[in-house]
Length: 221
Image (cartoon, rainbow, N blue to C red; front, side, top):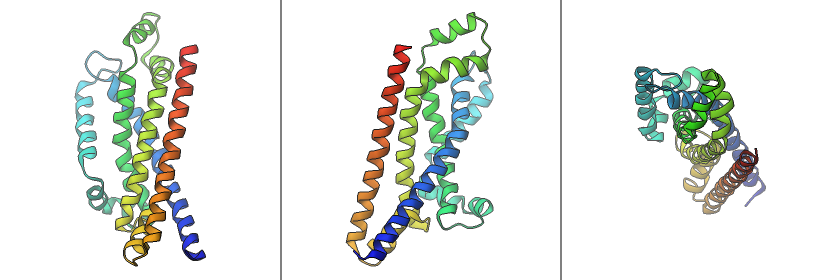
């Protein structure tokens, strides 16, 4: 491959990493509290609000059930409002973030619900407030599972970032389509796939290692 193609691959990789990093960061900031609330707001729970829990659950499920490529097209007006454009790396962050928030929220909800309720009852008996229970019991105990959930979310975002390239979203997916498919350069497509595999492998291995370390500290503590 020519130096120009290698430069394009390098830039596309950086674009993909930036898209995924920003979307994962914002998605976690919004999805973490949403997930904790969904896990603690049913009838009789810490922040009992069953009606709001049900409404948020419907909204989360509706967003999660929408195929990503359809979501990208459906929210183009919103993307233009936020990013000023509907194409390019910056614009791609908007649908990636919208897709990541409900996904991360459900993963966090599942992780928090796995925490032994005996610990929650013990904290309640000692007079801890609901916020203290979340901060000092639920989140620390669920942290290894949360890390694994976020790892899964980031891996999914890498795949989504390649998919958004089909509609001019930039990054590795866009490069693979424009050069590998439209210009009949299979070596570019093969390189794009290889880079995506390496990224996924790195993220998964790092997340698994971090979760094991946190779990070991939790048990020792």
